[in-house]
Image (cartoon, rainbow, N blue to C red):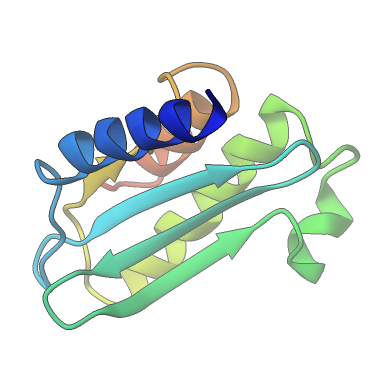
Length: 120
């Protein structure tokens, strides 16, 4: 039964990701969250490159964050990523939440990035 569920999960992920493609002009903002941390990166799928990244593990961010697994940490990661993107003249992105719902920490990453000037 486990292999069938995994196959269904992979099919769902493929179906979702074929709609979201990052280009050099409009990269994909991919968000991953674990139980303890949150990670975000800008990906150019055409050239298979990561253009900018940020996570709750960054030394500069971890000084300002008390807990790395809450919504405040997600917002700070989004703001930090947006600052790095704007330094590289990236203003528009495509948001990729993975297969997770747009809620909680993932939503706060998006809101933090929007506050700093990224356009979705």
